[in-house]
Image (tube, rainbow, N blue to C red; front, top):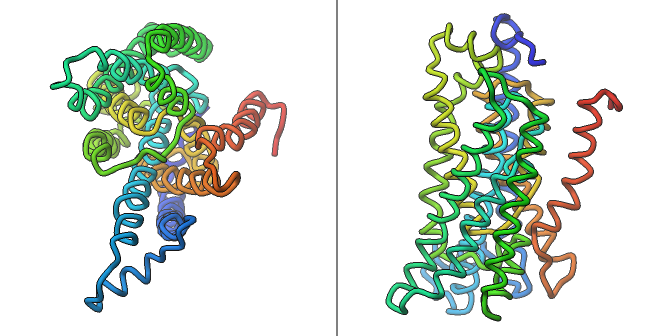
Length: 357
């Protein structure tokens, strides 16, 4: 049950606002530090500060350093920031929409729907004429992932909500069913894939930022940025929705319009994130829940902080994936699952009152 101090108590509101402002500053600093480390980390030994110093002094930058820093590490960094922020904010929006901290794009089948759309675009795009093959690879995959994510989110909400009330049990069961159906359809696509597509799909399905490039980023970034930009407009409505749909309508919230915008923003963000990075789980459930415990349920603070912490954690997981089995690279989805799985179990047990830590 969500309490109401952040709505009713002015003093508590001021305290929470100051605490949230400090948290935003700390998270922004943490993201800056992790970003600098991510740019620095690599087997080549290229130093971003040295390259920046050469650029500022007018010294010539070697082609090797320019390619490593500007064409490999920088797009990977920006991709990690956007994907982490998109997954975390989408999780926070879904949790607010369903009024339950267990909602997550991966758990309730939204990511599976996005994956199915992307896999269909990758495999079926191979049957297109060569003239359209390049377009299919760069533009069709994010679009198909968005459509799959949007369809999954809409089906999930329709199934789990009756008479304005959302059943958590129905939501989770519907998510399992959607995930199973998407997995079966994905299996059919894998069966139809050729050897090259099969290798790409296998590695892509475990999640990775290794394939980040300016071309892929240009295709997916506008969609993720649009979804992230829409999220702050939902904050007040999600706060009101915590009181129930009837109370939210009495407070002047256009509930149905808010639901449509929430579903659209989640579908856009998750679809583009899955299309560019593959399946990366647990960011969407762990980040919002931890922040809710730390600074409260007010979405005005929760959404921007989720973006910062989600981006920082995903970059941190990416760095771990690059060094834990160096010189090889562990898929980032495995790292987030190993770290996020125990946290999710703790959240589940804590919600049921089995643990109180």
